[in-house]
Length: 304
Length: 148
Image 1: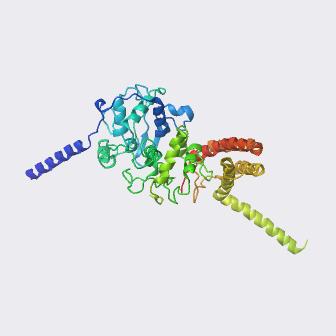
Image 2 (image 1 turned 120 degrees about the vertical axis):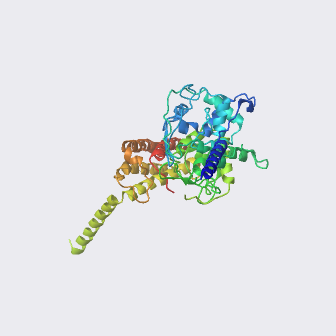
Image 3 (image 1 turned 135 degrees about the vertical axis):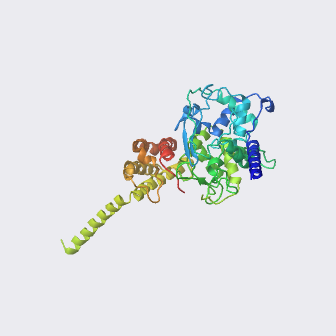
């Protein structure tokens, strides 16, 4: 009996150590960053492509208000309520005191400066595809934005999701750590579009269905999903007849520019804010997104 | 008046009352028909703006008039509880009816201004379309929940 207890204790400790080891947050250190002169114009482009203001600015913020990143928006999801943090350059309540390496760690590894895992409501599974240069440029641009003094309350997430260390296990399955690699056979526009859609633009975070633990369902990329909030749906944006197969590249680029679908309905819901971000991108980027979306495998709309 | 005439009249009266009653009974259908009229009009205007169909001043004005007429009664067809069935009306309509009605009023005004404008030339039409589209977008952002 005593021996059995020892065996169990041993297994328990071993399990704990293994869990601790497997789930330990990864970091990017300053020594891993290459010397880089920040290009603020490119940083601004990444800011609009990445849609930071759609979650980190006040609800329904329009125009310049979207550059006041004081956080505070409450995202009600099946996992609980996420209170979006302040990422304005305020050194006390925002991220003004962060180093470049800390910012890169957050964007590419989903880990905070105090070594905690971020919930994947922060779309680092897409941002990890970004180039370090673009991430640095984005940091440079964010540093120029207004300081907003606002302390955001902690997330309201019930057990077991409240155990942040558990996100480390989730990351083992759903965070592959791969940077975007252009396809040498594809055109520049196609590669640019693929980068924007899969990296900074993080389109799949809403348009790809998720399973019960919030991981992407394989084989359904961009084929539409349940809305993360409420009871609506997010449309299929693959070139299938149940998606946007009837749209031309020009239609897609026009929709991103104007907000109008080919039927002259408007894009709505949270896409309204995303579309308004897209108006700040150069026309070439919107066209590149369109080129890429027309090139991906057509998939029937996911009903999950 | 012959019996036949009276019975015909009675039938007509009954049918029209019946029709009205039906409209009251089915606010979802009523508001969807009104919105479809607005949608079809936007399509006609949009296609002219993009050059997909030829600019026609009279048709453009008729389209804007439909938008103007339909939006005036549109917010009246959202009684409490009319959320069952095939509808994309979002919950915010009932928690913020005032905001919902404000956007409808904005569209009513924008479309009133647009009636003469779209009759002038294609450039004026494009400008008016932007002003109208602003209301479309604003309402579809917060008050519509896409279901398919």
